[in-house]
Length: 80
Length: 449
Image (tube, rainbow over all chains, first blue to last red; front, side, top):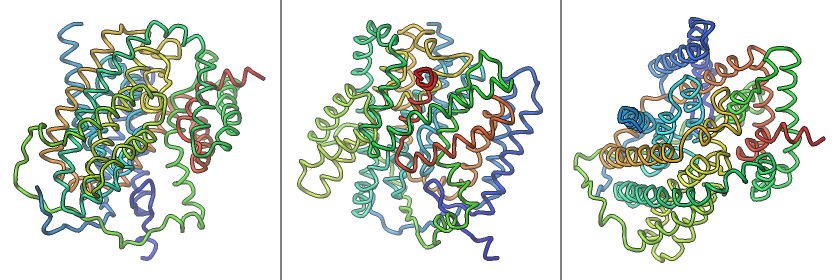
């Protein structure tokens, strides 16, 4: 249990180590699947399919993983 | 220019403004790594370069303002350019002046865009006749640039020493790939090396997670909280007049104007320098924070704008930091652009100027409105919904994809090697600008021996 809750600070924000591994795995998997589904002779199609895979993986990761930031709402900020 | 092309360019600008609004709000995303790979992918993907340029201009203008928003609202900078602003932002936040800060930053940003766009287009037109002469010395200019950037950086010694070894690393890998036959002799790998440099600090942090001692350093306690301001339903007036004081208008206009002539210097450096120089004249703490914020917001636009306009419209070689890093794809994106056959060579000065004017004006109008109306809401959304893990993973996938496309499986390890070297140097203080300049100059440096 302890390992799972490990929080690391990378590139200015918090990540969970296990979640990071999962999200990198999905991103690489989807991107490469996209790449290899494309026509071998068309590099722009390979790029397009790869990018589509990357974006799909991003959406999936966003859906699966909870952000680690701790947020509190302020009650009475005076807005001018 | 055809009307249909202008419509496409305008659409690209709106698309960029919307997309980069969200990217701008994500804390910690570095400008080079969010701008360069996307414009590179679009160019290589076969989209008309002039449309990509409009998209790119709109994107950096959007980032210029949106990166400041999370700094003002929660004290986290949205990008590198917003880091100097955090101090003033927190001061204003403590006094409950976040909404006023947002207004001032948005108006100042608009002012910065308008002043620097006109000034730098004038400078570009003045410099264009000399561009051919300057280009003849391109290789020397890159070496000179790497040395110059080293000398003005905080880590002078290590930066100077690292130039030749880094050139050996880049050129060594290229020659190795040719020797092994993984790439044809006429192809010079640049794209993935660029990305390798860009994500080097990130990849190095990730790789160091395998080392227990390093990993412990990166562990954080969960207690640090980020305070979100409560949402209000009041609608802010969109009128940009009367938001800034006369002193703020004069200070930020003057700073934006002068910064255009200093386009070869580091944007963050100029932001800090001018922001503090102008802010110093205000005695009261609150007034000083507001003035500094205003000047810095204007400069976040003008430093990028001038560097990119002058390098892309007039010179055709990347000499300004904004062009060396974020704008790199418009100079080197083989087979479409290579040094000596950049976007400047392929398009008329009037088309390039149109792209800049259209992209920046559309973007600044869109983001001005978004920041005045929705800044707090977007910050809350991004911080609550978008996990940092997904962003990091996206970058890594992008780098691996382009590395693989450039030179196959071996290049993934090549990029790891570059990232280990460049990331370590980055930690020691050798900045992106020096590393990019060295990459441009690498064949020339190696040929000197």
